[in-house]
Length: 580
Image (tube, rainbow, N blue to C red; front, side, top):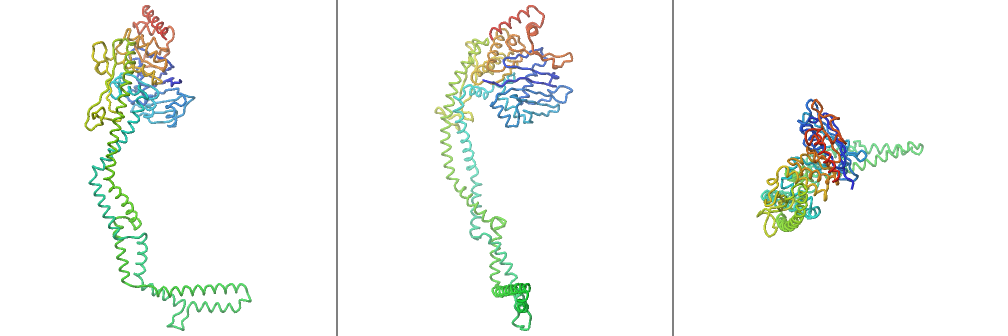
């Protein structure tokens, strides 16, 4: 299986590091150096690349910003590749380029595959690419939620499948409970809303408005209000067109046009152009006759009834009362009424909805209890296997009498779901509290690792957990800082051996001060300061042959040229090569 590999990191102006390149490789890489030389900056740098918190105090004094750049080779189809490409990042021949810049003022920028991205995206990718373990990460293992997550991760589908079903039912139950709370706690407000809607609908129903009625009535009111003026104008226009019976000598337009038409008709046969004009004048005469007739009819039909005008104005007032409350015109009022009916049906149906939701909630609670029990059973079975595997690893880490176990418990809660015949508290991940227990020697009672493990023991428990995980759910790259804290001698040799075993299925980078651990590495990097106290490009180098023996001698005895230390260093290397 092709795994992701962290190939290289370039670090500039970070802590004691001026400008250095850390070249990494598959397998087991040990990073060593004098105390204060900047080894831990390797862990800090990777943390920044993976979305860690940007601390301006990390920026080297006198520099404007610190920059960390990384190259990670990622196989095609990996989830990290998919997520990066969704963000617009581009891969460089299968290599993902990541950079993080932290300014002395505290501003932070992140780039992925040549694109500026949110820092949070780097943290998302970290879950798929690298597992970082330092003292703070060990403290994280002390949290019960992290211990449950570790167990669930180890169990795989045996827990993931029932957990997915449980999570779906849990989300549905939360949604139903929220809706029930809304219905019950807002009952008074909803009743007031229903009353308001009923009043409005009754008021509209009493008026019975028609679509566009307000427009029609406005036009009618305008006509009725000016009836006398309209009648006078129509009569005068009719007289001008068709003549006034009371003035037989008067000249009107119809008579004049008729005379013009007769004059042309008499000679139209002599000239086609004049004949055409005669036809057009004839058409004018016909049009004048039609208009005159319509004017006469308009004047006869015009109703100047003041009672009708009063009725129109009264109706308009009723419609205006509605538009003041429910819409800018009658059309908007009718829309409000339509929507009000739908909302009222919804509100009036709350009682029925309340019963339906209550029944569904009770059914879901019963279903959730059954799923929670299945989840507990799956975790219990996985916990036995997980504890046995970690215990076996601890035996190989110079803790032969240590025993690891899990306590899986529930908390009674009258408002919880019923599991095993009793109501217990529940959450999005089930009803279980999972706690990792350690009995460091025979006769010692199992105690939570937060209370029962020393710093060195906790480091070894962490390593044992990761070695067990590597066989079931491997992470491409592991970075350990201080994993060997508080240990030495045989325990240190065993830690080196187990790290080498882990490196067979993943890339392992370890910051260490123990030669017994470093000797098992496939590659050893030395971090050393220059005379001015900074780490430059030449200060991070790969140790080979004699240089590696000298560094291991220094780590063993503090003296690079001690013959005894050299012999011991060579012996360690030979032992490690034989194991590998």
